[in-house]
Length: 171
Image (cartoon, rainbow, N blue to C red; front, top):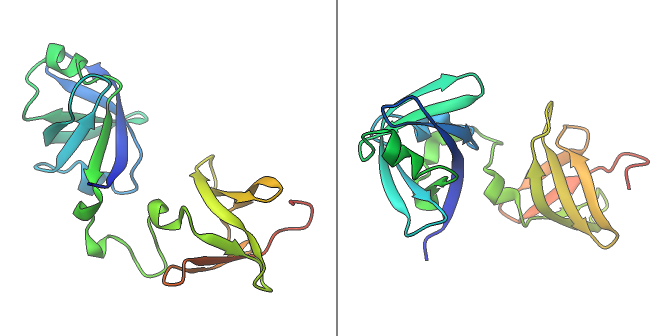
């Protein structure tokens, strides 16, 4: 079974030449949307469709893409609401600097406090603004932790453990 990673969502068409408007979900748009990149569109109707990027530009808060396989607005309309994904195996090894990681690598990791006691498991990562917020699934419900240096102390991917310091009053 193939593991897929979401890189964006087609929300509308743009113009009459088959360009689509995408809300991006990737930190690497210049790599994901470069000419020749292959993305797979998962729509509500039918099988996934492989699409080859022919152009990419940014406009306002959107990424605008054209694909080899789409020649006009009618074909582009059929892609509305589709999720654009890549195979996990398509990730490039050199994309991240030391100390960086992909969200999918963090979700599911156990969070422990400085004494080593389990706090919970990372369930989701939100991007509300200034910093990411990690949602932990705990015995007492959800705990929202800001991803800042004073709170997330260490991420040990090898052991699958994150060491956190929970600010007073947050629990």
